[in-house]
Image 1 (spheres, rainbow, N blue to C red):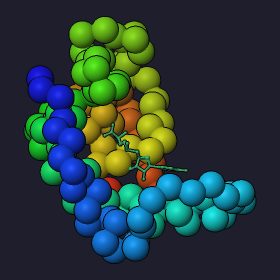
Image 2: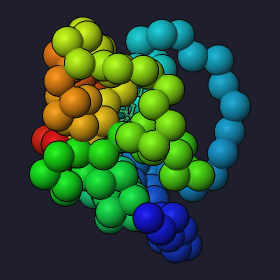
Image 3: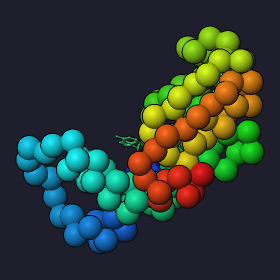
Image 4: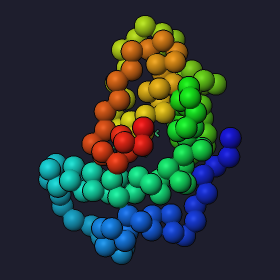
Length: 122
Ligand SMILES: C[S@@+](CC[C@H](N)C(=O)[O-])C[C@H]1O[C@@H](n2cnc3c(N)ncnc32)[C@H](O)[C@@H]1O
């Protein structure tokens, strides 16, 4: 499994849609935070999958469960133990490769995400 590439234009589409040009700090309430996350992930969904889709196994029929950028795979490390027959809620499932992998292991997996762009890719 190879690491995702990190080209300079990695977030080009989202930056262009949202007009983002840099980093700033501000106090946000929960509703602002949700709105900002949704706007970002909707705008970045295509680029995210272009740069991370293969690494995350998004198009694998059985799904994949990759924990982190180091490529730690649940199928190798079994941090969750035996998931067969368990109810699993994945918050922030994106296009749901982990939830699909869990379902393939016999779990009753439910994925939840606030970005329609990410869910649509799934
Ligand atoms: C880095 S992606 C990870 C996607 C997926 N878990 C994977 O491993 O491929 C983070 C996801 O979290 C979602 N997210 C961020 N904040 C969230 C929130 N408050 N509630 C639900 N989903 C959220 C984003 O929309 C995005 O799809």
